[in-house]
Image (cartoon, rainbow, N blue to C red; front, side, top):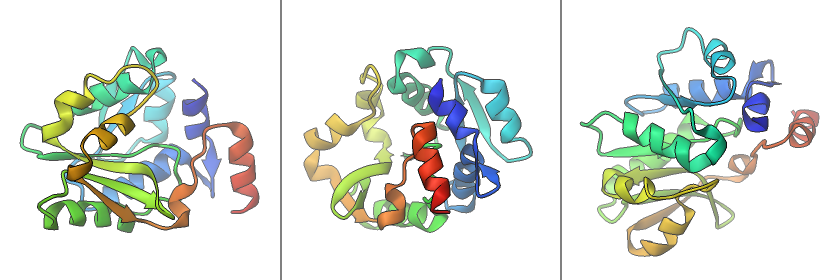
Amino acid sequence: KLLETVAAAPFGGRPLIRIAAETALQSQADEVIVVTGHQSDKVEAVLGGLNLAFVHNPDFADGLSTSLIRGLDAVSGDMDAALVCLGDMPRITSDTLDRLIDAYATDADARIVVSTVNGKRGNPVLWSRAFFADLKRVHGDVGGRALIGEHAASVVDVEVGADAGFDVDTPDVLAKLRAGE
């Protein structure tokens, strides 16, 4: 619940979630799907007027994995990968997303493309459809981090710079981030 309240909070004059959605729309991504949970009507209102697909996750309280599954289920059948982005990372740019997409498109071994900041893996992550079934078996408040380790030969890391390290999970972090705007 807290994450979505924070995601709707303004940063630089715009809600965090809108920044993330607009960034995804400005990238090379073919479609942008937003998974909503708590306060879904508020999140959809904040994103009004954008060319997005919305999927509601009624099981959001059971953890991040349930939203991941809902989002993957909504990916069009003709898409061969999904770029999983978080709604609380306001300094991710469309260039960053495009670099992940380009790495996937140009490296035959890149089935999982992971953002790194100073060598530390984080988000966003681009996943080949070949891993969707494995991702749908993840449970609880986790994403696909364990799968990245299990499939090391399929992973390509892309250094994206320090700005991608800003993740706003609490009101305190938001306040610190705003102080540095």
